Length: 63
Image (cartoon, rainbow, N blue to C red; front, side, top):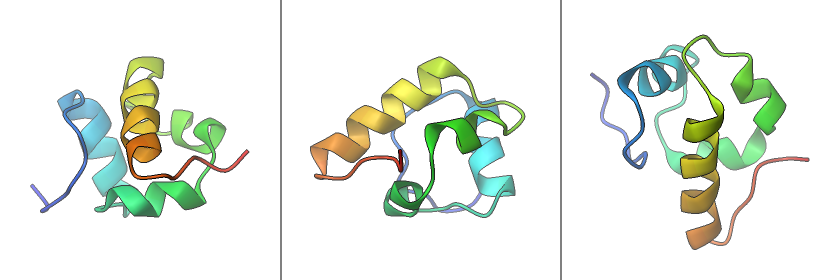
């Protein structure tokens, strides 16, 4: 598995991000929730966890 700094989500969600080329949380600030939800394995719970983690770093998803 790739070296990531994502918060703990499901393995399918983590694999979806890695397979899409994302390995760092800050990369997700350049993506919309809608775009991430299109990834196979990504669900609303993972989006919520990632959104909270981005918020803790002063970042958000794109609108």
